[in-house]
Amino acid sequence: MSENSIVLIGAGSTVFTPGLMTDLASSRTFDGWTVHLVDLNGEAAETMARVGRRIAGQRGADLTFVPHEDRRDALAGARFVTTTIAVGAAEGWRHDVDVPARHGIAQTVGDSVGPGGVLRALRHVPEVVAIAEDVADLAPQAQLVNYSNPLTANVRAITASTPVQAVGLCHGTMHTLGKLSDDLGVPREEVHAVFAGLNHLCWLLDLRRGSEDLYPRLREAVLATAGGRDAPSTSEEGVHLAVSADLFRTFGRYPAPGDRHVAEFFGWYLRGADGGPADDTDLPWGLQGGRDDTMLYIGEKSDLWERLHAQADGSAPLPEGENQEAERLVAIAEAVVTGRDHVELAVNLPNRGLIPNLPPTAVVEVPAVVGAAGITGLGVGPLPDAIAAVLTARAQQQEVTVQAALTGSRALALQALVLDPLVPGLEVATAILDEAVIAHGPVLAAFAPVGPAA
Image (tube, rainbow, N blue to C red; front, side, top):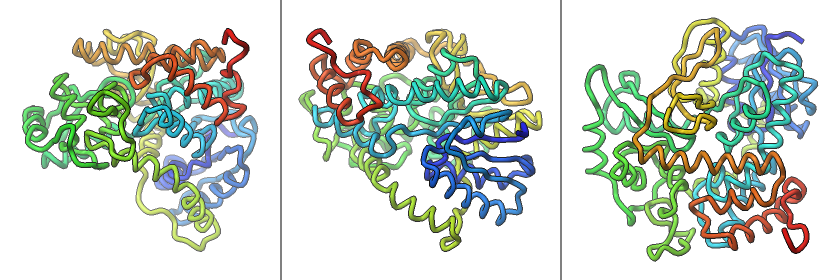
């Protein structure tokens, strides 16, 4: 197999895959390349390949799309491998939100942190490590790019368990920066920003236009616009977000990527006024819109597939425009292939001193330079102490989560749940895990209680 190949594992991703194929077809760098589309659902892989061929034809691209059910048939000699898997698909995500909700824990996303993030990691970590082991065997020089959540736990597991070059990509900071630039009335291309932290809780350390410090303007806009606990429901990012404003006031830096993600890292935003369970149909801090968006996204998967089938057979128009998540992967691949250096706003990779007051083994989100030598994270120096304390606690909890997933240890899984700020104690953690084992079936069977001492 030619080395000029890209392998997408989890090709049934209804949003990411069409965007990636569109962006690849828009780049002449990849003319003559092969895109291998891998999915356990062979019909999904075949449908995406047909959509890809239409996109390539429309854009005059010399790309070959090949569907696969077995990833090992696709991996040999690959230059890039991308993982967008979802173990349990949309129904699994629904369980990650609904099971904790039945025990009084509201989540706005439930795919990275919170008890839903832990449950998702217990399913995803073994599979992404198995994929990485196959990459090490069949394409040891490949760059693996993971998009699957929980992104931090997945990348940590891969880099801790295999020699594969792996990073995680997320569009969140890019979206936040775009919204803040719009709110400040400054063209995005004129703004220089530095973000650093963990995926889905990344902090804006610097914001400038040329030599002008934009942080005072951002602070003024946030204080003038954002609400508080009684803020109206919203799912739009920007300076009006109540949780982000509260964290800005508390820690002195603005967080990303939006309230629906950052709220889940803390123990109080998703609780009632008395500190007890919140009503997940009327969440405080304007968070209901974020939760509603999550549930809408989970529920619309079947409609997306109907559209993709129509696009595959030519009865519906192809997707228009560019996909920002995929575009970053294409820009990175272009820089690696051509050797023309490219600066990325945020990449997730092992810390190793990039943020010196976070654990060296933590997977951190930092800027990076990409070129012929690969992806190199840029050191940002120490974070403010209070922010480092929050992130260190979460990184250590994620380490326990990863070890639980890799070993199948029920005891570690319960520890990971108890360490989450949204979980009030062992009794609730145990109830959530036991119910999740039933809901998810074989993929969580290792974590079922065994005998009276379990």
